[in-house]
Amino acid sequence: MLAAMLDHLKLEAEIGGYEAAAARSDQVAGFYREIAALINARPRNIAFAASATHAYSTALSSIRFEPGDVVLTTRNDFISNQIAFLSLRKRFGVEIVHAPDIREGGVDVEAMAALMRTKKPKLVAATHIPTNSGLVQPIAEIGRHCRELGLLYLVDACQSIGQYPVDVEEIGADLLTSTCRKFLRGPRGSGFLFVSDRFLEAGHEPLFIDMHGARWSAPGAYEPAKSASRFEEWEFPYATVLGCAAAARYAREVGLEAISRRTPALAARLRDGLGAIAGVEVLDRGPELGALVTFSIKGWEAVPFKEAMDARRINSALSYREFAQFDFGDKDVDWCLRLSPHYYNTEREVDDVAAAVAELAA
Image (spheres, rainbow, N blue to C red):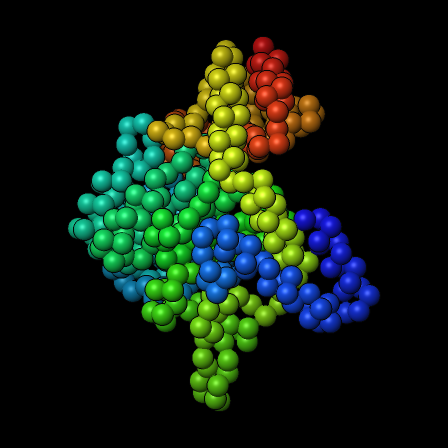
């Protein structure tokens, strides 16, 4: 990934940005092929985005919401998605409905399906793996109900791309968004949007469409691109795009099935180690758990604890109640630390992390 990006930046410096993009046009097209292969889609259904949130908001902007329209979502959807729904409510008067959770954690699919029938939502939205816990939500089951009822379905796969096999045909998503970093291990400032043929053929287009996504066909008219490129912008970070293509190709070479076995196993080992420490509470709940491990620890404030982990060269992230109002309210915590073991980590490293937390908890 790094080599692909540096090589292109060097070429831009040598011959110019436009010329470098033209010289590497086939490699740039490879981004769409690689992402499409990653999620069982076609290249024409893939759009590059600056981030998962950028992809998500662009997708939302293409849906013509009216007062009284319903957005049906889960209590575990990502913070930026929840804020976007609230913005839609403020601007257009949409109703936000959150499906309830099952006792073990995660959305109650049957209750959500019942709400689909009674509320007739304009959009159904679900996050596959929330950023604030290890929960894996049953997005394919939700998609089956959406298909049966002909409902638009938007999936946030930001934490699952690169961690699990993701198949848009199996999921039945009309729209799916993700970053290219996190578990896919691509560069920051990159993401993608999958747009189904059904959604394209229905004429959906982003609120602000530019010269890349549309043709100015007459002084008073434009024609949107027939592919998902209508969701892209003309200005393109070509080195970043090539880095994303390399990351997606590498993940497929390693094998998503193998990764999806390895990462949850490491996470389960870490949860076991953390759960045995007095004063530490593992916070992950749900019938299926992935490779995000969250926990709280008594006697520490958030920032000093993370700094103590940083000092031990342990990469981690903090999540606060404002990131997950429903989930953290249920768990009665104000913050947690998040760890994300990946396939390249070893059992020894996982055990060392648990030992470091035990030392800090003592």
